[in-house]
Length: 260
Image 1 (spheres, rainbow, N blue to C red):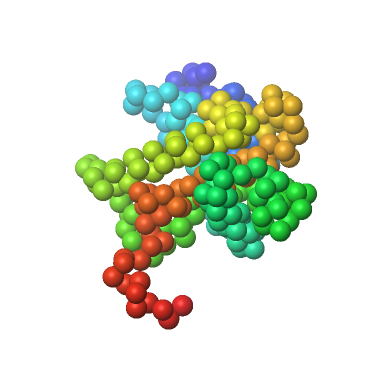
Image 2 (image 1 turned 90 degrees about the vertical axis):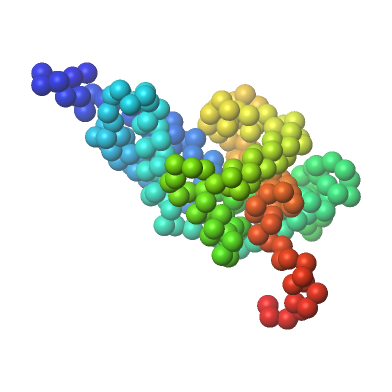
């Protein structure tokens, strides 16, 4: 693993950890639209691996693989960040889905089935499932969900390095986690299993499909629908910061009829 001079043999380590880069890329693909090529993710991930090899110092407490995973995933996300992952039209349609999820859950007292959602949206089941495939890359949170000056403050509190954590940021983060845990527990059993396999076991779509006896496309549909259900809960939970961003103070509501 080392040269005669004691330096890490970079080529050997690159070969050793290349499968890790590929695994992270295929795992990330479930969160991205079909327009994203896995080869592009792998290429960016290899740059992250090389960066990790150059920066890693032994004795700092973290295993190299743990450190490398962070750098590889970060490099892949950096390569995607300049692009809009999801067309605005599809994101708008997914907001319609989220709104209908909330309405049907309130009316029925349970999570709505796919057919019920499609019918309420005025779509055939096939068209609804195609939307779920097209919306691959639908995220739990978008920057615009935190929009406005308050949203900027929230991002600053949660991303700025500081030796002392902001108590309000910690509280909001705890509320978000509590809401998410509750929302995940409310998912239909099939979707809950899929989410556990993806996020806890870190399996890719093909592996999950083999376990569940469905195609990769079907797993992708279930993932998109699960994210829509979770977003519907998070965006409507009064204690979460993203829900608060969308509400004006009561003192402003009575006279705010105009002004778009």
